[in-house]
Image (cartoon, rainbow, N blue to C red):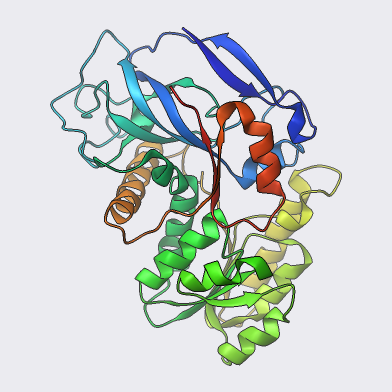
Length: 369
């Protein structure tokens, strides 16, 4: 079967993306052919097209960090797998402690809508994926809404509850509170009874406030001074996707016992040189701060930590997190934030739109039939 893919051939502007058609292999044992409905534009793709992603793939490659789609065929000669109904959480998503491919007991079947975290390869009409990496969606959940909560939602969920371990009644600062990750961080924190100071641009203030945060305009206000007014003793956690020199201000906002969670280096995305250097410098600074006797912590969040060493556990936790996020979306307790929708063939325009800034939520690509 031939499928449309959007390929990034080399370092270059969004317009260098090219549409290609390639033959897909038939799904083998433990694999599934998935027709993509929605995928997204993440900050990772903005870094990758500059050659600045930490684990930069070799060119050329097909971008696409996550997807929602429909299972068309299961490999291994199986057209139906188990008696599962398709409800999220119906199976384990892994076959045993070695993290091998899921088998006939995973509840997956043709026609089921699923989500997957891919890192690359999702900007395509169809993909072949390991069944163990597929997470079913609850019935009735919109594909676009689900797409906003995969990489962004899992990142927000894990940073808030697994990394910083924020408790109800505490105050946190979310930089980029209108972004794909930030807007979900705000909502998840507010749902947990956490007070949120959301930092965003002027055009995004109303949207950030509508999510339940105290909106602070980084262009018009002195952010550290404003945070001190709102939280004189410091805050329980700061979530910083910017990195660079500004990371010091984030560290100073913390109360004793507080946690800085760094999860990006947006400030250095256009710096020339080795893409690993900004991250390594940041890691060095965080490590140094952790040696200081002031009771504060500094962490760098890596969504893929544990994937290679503990694949079964990684997949089980991913299924757990996505199942919870999808349930919150389906129940209306979490609102999908969609900055824009573009056809897959217009991926270059979507990437350019995402990079212009000032948007609220995630930019979604629609693969169609």
